[in-house]
Length: 241
Image 1 (cartoon, one colour):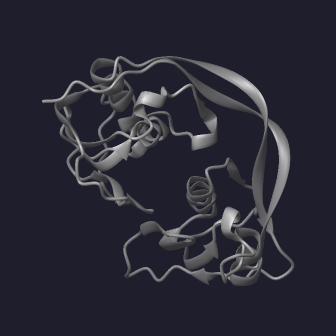
Image 2 (cartoon, rainbow, N blue to C red):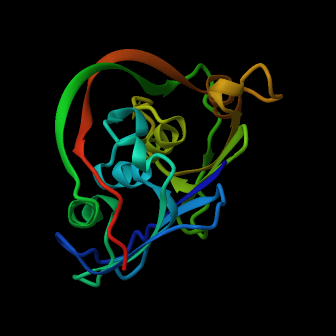
């Protein structure tokens, strides 16, 4: 499976305040049969998803990882959608500002009903190792980030990324909660490559824990902590248009 998540950001953009709904939204079942999936938040409040499943859309809508979602109906497990939507504000927005509109879209088109529970789950923290070796951001290059999952291998590249954003990206790739406790300020350019945990030992390449330590000089440590979980009470196949 190949999953590409593109995070677009502009440090100088004037972001809309609180967009609550998509003015226009097209939702269609993806019939390509492809394993490739992409979600993209574009300038002008435009959201595009290609071959995105229900769990992916829920992760984006609530800003959580896959392990924080439960109750997705089996009837939706093998169904993916193409979505093109534009916020009524029409201005540039952050992912966080877009989420209420995506939640509203899921409620309207997927009949989503849910509640939130706090559960004790394993989470991770990103900390400094003995010798961090991070490359400071080269200012002429604009901030960007991309996570590519291709088969058993995962590649994360970023330009102008903070440790907080790195922790978020790691959490997305690992489907786990990852918090930044490095204490490192500033923006960095980096590339990180590792093998999925379920393939470690059978496919050549380091685990994420080894890769972070060897390639960045950082560490991932586990801990038990209360985590908010989205419990899906109802969700149906989307009404198309």
